[in-house]
Amino acid sequence: MSRHVALLLNNPFTGDSRSWKLATSLARAGWRVTVVARAREDLAAREDRDGFTVIRVAQPRPLSWLPAPSLPVGSMEAARPGGPGLRARVVDTVGRAAQAARYLLLTRRWAADIAAAVPAADIWQSEGLVTLPVALRLRAMLGGRVVYDSRDVHVESARFARLPGPWRRLLARGERRWSRSADAVITVNRPFAAALERMLGLRATIVMNGPVAWQRPDPPERRFHARFGLAPSTRVVLHLGALQPHRGIEELVEAIGLVDDAALVIVGDGGRKPAIEALAAAMAHRDRIHFLPAVAPAEILPLTASADVAAITIQPSTLNHRLNTPTKLFDAIGAGTPVVASDLPGMAEIVRATGCGTLCDPGSPADIARAIREVLDAPAEVRAALRAACLRAARGPLAWDRQVERLLEVYAGLEPGRRGPSVRPASRARRGRSRARGPSGDTG
Image (cartoon, rainbow, N blue to C red; front, side, top):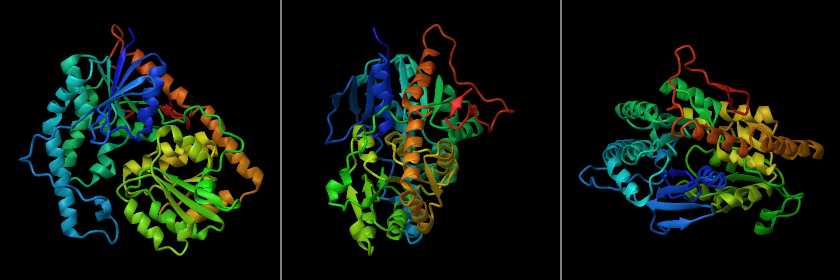
């Protein structure tokens, strides 16, 4: 009988491409896979997908006596110039603290609800910090092993960075305790692994968000030209992903006005979408900015291949953003589409090592435009070389198949009778340094 892995998500599993890749690849490797996602009224409680099952369980809210005001859409705007004033910032901060307190008290019930809906698993894989204590509770109830997929430097991410100091310290202590209780820890890149070693005192295996195997058509379909009636000579700059604060989308909207014969296509949804649409409508070059809703993970590579350049202009607003290597970076590489990326430690290492594009100052629309022109206005042979560099990296050290092999090695080490757990505290001499070697994030 095949072994069972349950991926525990704090989202409804509609656009989580890493979890989709994990579920699909693990199922193909012979695992019985259950994706445990959060319930949403418009989504089925159970779905049978391509080789795996999705079960959606509502996060319980039993503590009505604990005040936790609803946060306004795009509440992180309080940190932006011209954003809401002191009162809005106080509401935001108090609300986040109350939500954190409520969460710590409901973990046991959430785990019990999941245990009632999901068969016992050999591996409970927490896809982020929020579901880590839930995974640990499920292990105590039903057995199995816990793998912590630390996709972010959570305490330094936008979601938690504005918590009051005492709450952040409590969360940091919780993550340290919970992660050391896991049987294995994985993360997405070398900078994150170094941060985990420094902050949590443990070593993690790197399983990057590498691109899945995909054959780029030659030439690719010009989907955006057909969809928006663009002239054949118009070059397409793509931003794909959640429309949230500090993603540099506003700067990109301004920058496209400084690039001749180019259109910007923004694909995605999120709390910032109305504000970004309003900003675009106010621009003199509004006719060159287009919007599409979020697409399913399987559609991302064909869509990205239709663009001439993929722009990833994340702002350096948190440590998490500075070290991040977003999935959209690897999607662009996998699609053979050159990138313009923020010159931040996480992304810069990948871009320089692969030669897949150029870097920019994400806070400067003028410099973003400069980087876009550098790609779009390059001679044809240079643009072809950029595309080839992307595809070489996608089929080589960054390939998703290689990342899955690394994850399966972690799982093999957790089998009954094998030595474990595999979470090892980092020695003081090594603390602050990653185990990784080389730009691909290969571990030693």
